[in-house]
Image: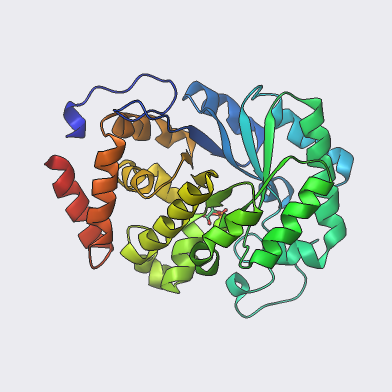
Length: 313
Ligand code: PEP
Ligand code: MG
C-alpha cells in the first residue's frame, strides 16, 4: 500500500523495471514554472496559452506573444515544452476569437475550429512560437486542441511545419480522434490525450454542469478503452502518446494510463510527487495487468475498486 512506501526521490519518472516515464507539468503562465521545476517536472506537457489572453479584447501581437512564450521557454533549457495553440470557446471564450452566442458551445466553434475560422490569428501564434523556439534552448512541441478529423490534423501539422515548428501534434479529446488514432498518428508527430474533454464527449455530459458532474469520471471503462486505442496506435507507429488531462494526476489511474500505452504524463505540479512514487512501485507488465482489470469493469466506481483490490494483491 502507498502509505508504507517510501517517497520516490525527485528525479525522472521511472517504473519499477526501469522504464522511463517522463513526468511533465501543466502550466497556464510562466509564473508556475519555478514550482514545477522544484517538484521535478521534466518539462511542460501542456502550456495552456489561452490563459494568457483571457482578458484581451484584441488579439495579442506577435511581439507580445513572443515575450510571453520566451519567458516560459527560457526556464526549460534542453527540455520539452508542449505548447497548445489557443483553445478558445466553450469554458474558455476569448472575445477576439469567439463571436456570437452558441447554444452548445462545447460542441461549437472551439479550439482549432475557431482558429481556422480566423487563420491570421493561428499563423501569428505559430510564428511567435517559432521565434520564441529559435530564441531559447527549449524544445518546442506545438499541438492543436479539439481536433476531430484526420483532415484537421493534416491542416494543422502542415501549417506548423511550414512556419518553422519541427514537432507538431494534436490533442485527442474527441472520441472520433481516439477511434482513428492510427490515421491521426500517420500524419501527426505526436498526440496528447486530454482526458477532461475526452470524458465529457464520451459520456455526453457537460463538464461545466454540476447536475451531471457524476458522469465526468475518467475511470469510466469507455474512456479507458479509447485511451487504449490511442496507446495501441502509438505503439504501432512508434510515436509519443502523452496524457495531459486531470486523470494523469490520480496516481492509481496514472498507472492504468501507462498500462494502456501512455508514454508521458502531464499534470499540475502539486501531483507530481505522488504520481512519481506510485509509478516507481509498478513494472510495465503490472501496469498492463491493472489496465486490463480496469477495462473489464462495468463502470467508473467498479474500475476504481477493482484496480485498488488488484494492486493490493
Ligand atoms: C483536457 O481536455 O483534458 C485538457 C487537458 O484540456 P482543457 O482541460 O484545457 O480543456
Ligand atoms: Mg480540453
